[in-house]
Every structure is written in C-alpha cells, then in structure tokens.
Length: 480
Picture 1: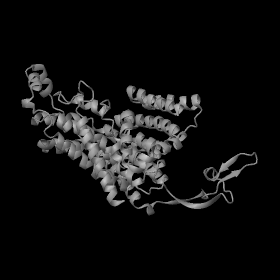
Picture 2: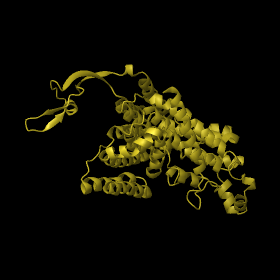
Picture 3: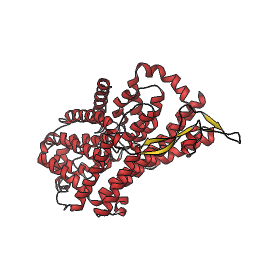
Picture 4: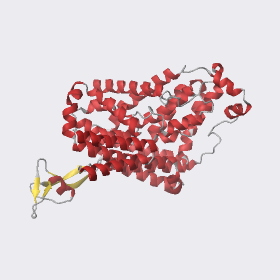
C-alpha cells in the first residue's frame, strides 16, 4: 500500500508540474513520471491511446486547412452579424456562437477572433462585458463533448464499444448537446445581471475619467465584417460540413460501411505454444495475419468508425488544398493546427502515464472503490471533474479515466450521463481561452481575482457543468 501511494504521488506530481508549465509540458513531463514508474519501480507500461491520437491528427489537420483557406473567417463573420443584429441578447447569443463553433471544428481555440467582438458589442450596448465574455469562454470548451470529431467524444465511443457498451457518436451527441445547451443557458441566465451595470460601477467610471483609458476602452472597434471572404473559403466550409455529415450518417447507418476479409481470433481460443517454448495469443496471431487452425479464422469485418473519421477528414483536407487554395504551410502555422498538436502530445503522455498506473493496481483500486461505486455510481463524475482540473484536457480525462470506470463496474449509460463532468479546468484560471478572454475585455470587468479562485469563470463554469451533468444523467436514465 505504501508503494502504491508513493507511485500515485509521482503521477500527481507529474500532472501538477506539467500543468504549471502548460502547453507541451503536460505530455512531456508525464513522460518523466512514466519513466520513473517503468524504470524506477519496474511497473509494466500501459498502452498509449494511438487510435484517439490518429483521429485528433486527422480532424485537426482538416480544421487547420479550413482555417488556412479562410473558411474560419467566414464562420466568424456569420456569428458576428448575428451578434451585432441582436446586441441586447449578447449574454445568451455569445455562448451559443462559441459553443457551435467548437462543435463544428472540434477545438475551442477557434473562438479567439470572436472574443474581442463580443466584448466590443457589449461595451457599445452598455452591457458589462464580464457577463457575456465569462460564459462565452466556458461555452467554447463545453462544446468539445458535443463535437463529432473532438477527441473526448471519439474516445468515449471507442472505449465504450471495447467495454461492451454499444454506443455511436450520434447517440452521444443526442445526450450531450441538449444537456450542455441547458447548462449554458442556465449559466447565461445566472450571468444576465451579474456584477454592477457599467454606469453604476465606480471602478469603471473612474477609468473613464482618464482620457487614455477612455480611448483604450472605446477608441477602437473589433470587427471582421470589413474582411472580404473569397469564394474558395466558402467552398472549404462546405467541404468541411460535408465531411462532418458523412461521418454522422455512417455512424447512424453502419450498414453503409464497407466490409473486408481478414483473419480474426476465435473466442476463447487461448494461447498457442511455439517451438521455442514461448506462447502467443490468438489475437496476436490474428494481428500478425497468421491463420492457425483452432485459434484463428477468416471472416468479414466492418470498417470501424475510428478509421472512417480519419479517412474522411484527411480526404476533406486534401480537397481543400486542391480546390480551395489552402496553403499547407499556413495551416501548420495556424492556431487550430498548433493547439491540436499540443493536445496530441498532452493526451499521449497523460493517458499513457495514467494507464500504466491504473493497469498495475486495478485489483486494489476495485477493492477500495467498489462499495462506493456500487452505491453511488454517479460519484465518478466528481473524479472526472477533479482530474480535469489537473490535466486541462477533456480528451485526456476520457482516455485516462474511462477504462478505469468501466473496470470498476460502472455501466455505460451512467458514464454517458456524467460525460459533461470531464470539463473542470476552468476551476483554476490558467487555460489559454480564459486568459485570452481576460485580456480581450478592455473594460477590465472580466478578471482573475486576487485570491485566484474568485475569477469571472467560476460561477458560469460551475453552473454549466453541474446543470449539464444532471440533465445528461436524467436523459440517460430515461432512455437507457
């Protein structure tokens, strides 16, 4: 037990130090923890989540190429037109815009262009910018569990199917989208009268008395409406949306997927003893393409959805490059592609470290938690939330913790119901979208408080995640 605790502290320390450095450090420093467990304590290494990583690379490449073509600018323009048409409703419309942008693209880093616009519209309307900005930043991350190409959703489906819960991407979205929208609108309603109105806020009024401050706050206007969008950019968006539609349709109608002939391992086939005395499993034989009587057989296998997503996304990216004048070098230099690659490294290191620890102590963990989990299966949501606070990645939380949750005996519908709880990294305001939102708010009303946790994102974040999780749990309780 003492050794188990020491090794857990190594895991937690690696995650904590990685979160302090941020960016690539999350994955890289997890590698140090992994090295200590494997080389220092002789633990059997777990398995890195390669399928999820491949999907992220494909999806981020497609979204990055669309951004390079100018397609993202067109989507931002559409959102800005709607916001400027209804400025008095910006506290509700702003989070809807950032939410659906993330749902479309699979990453919350696409909304940075929209944040200054939200602040500008609020200021011009006399609305305290903290109200729409705080909940809009939360919405940009909440959309990740509602995107058909986001790592969190794809990983949930892949891991669930491997653990006997037959679920598809559309079925996940049918729960997560309405649940998260309920959470966001509740958070927006809670933010509607948040803080003092600008004309009654003494701190803000004091700033306006300084001519330099007044010019800084009101002297410029953030907008994308003056940009001319080429037709190729619009074509890129159409290609991207068509790719998403194909993925969703194939997920709904798996009978449309092609099948191919392959070697499959027979159930309960056990292991084969080789001439040198070593043994090899039936699954290893099948993976190697070796047909062994009594252990493997030839059969037809349907194309898996993880491969479908990769093929469709990469093909869509190629079409944008060929027909939409998207420059590959510009895509690689863009924030969408770069942030996506950072997520790949983070998930790679974090999930591998977590899987190594949990796979070596699964029996002990089951004995410790089976009573609590059996009586209160929803309590796993608290674990998901706390882990997310540490590692700043919803995809990494799903990849690292979902296999453990299944091994603890928690049912698939319960885990689907608590899926919104994997977003907890607003709790400590060190995530790029939150920091950027604070900087974009020229009024200074969106803040990171003196005591760190009293920041502008805490209230809308807690309201949204708690409400979304409760609603999702009720939906799955009714329909599963």
